[in-house]
Length: 234
Image 1 (cartoon, rainbow, N blue to C red):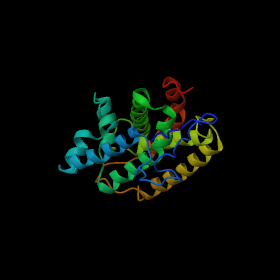
Image 2 (cartoon, rainbow, N blue to C red):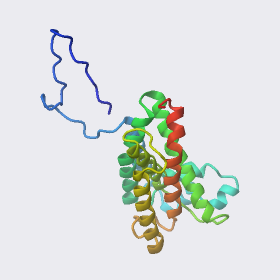
Image 3 (cartoon, one colour):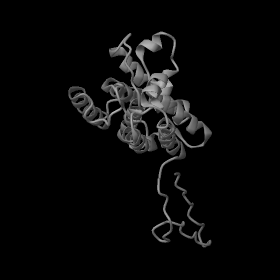
Image 4 (tube, rainbow, N blue to C red):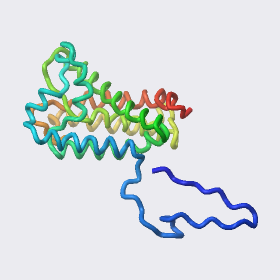
């Protein structure tokens, strides 16, 4: 949601009435104060699981989940399709909320309009793909399945950390915000690794790798700068 800013009236000119919904003129407020591309991705995750839930989980996992072995056998499309597959409603809603929370600052930095929206969608998918590569690096040539948008959501988190460090712009790679959020995310994922994913709602027998979370976060930290530059937000 973009904030409208009104210029001050000229000396002696008519005053500008307060905007509807401001403190001086109360009015209805939006339920979700996030740019529309963020809302679109969030709803896409929920809608995808709604459709998926009509089919057996095992069939959906085997048809759309990411597998390092299948990637080597010529199925790169799984890098994208697996992002929108989840184990249950709790898993899907948790990732949707994660994307909604951390996607807003990223979308604002990338800019509004068609160019900014396209950059946001591509950034989301790119971090999800790199997250799957991180998972594949530790499960090379193995026929294990990984599903979920948590890798891409981690990428949004990494990008948001740099934006927080830059106070609304893309900040340094090693700002305090990046180090603190990254360190906390590492600790959480170490706990996930040691507890067998106890902190993540289940997804059947499919694997939701902590490796994908960390790779996604790193990809978000590194890619937000080039994406902002390509979007014209220098």
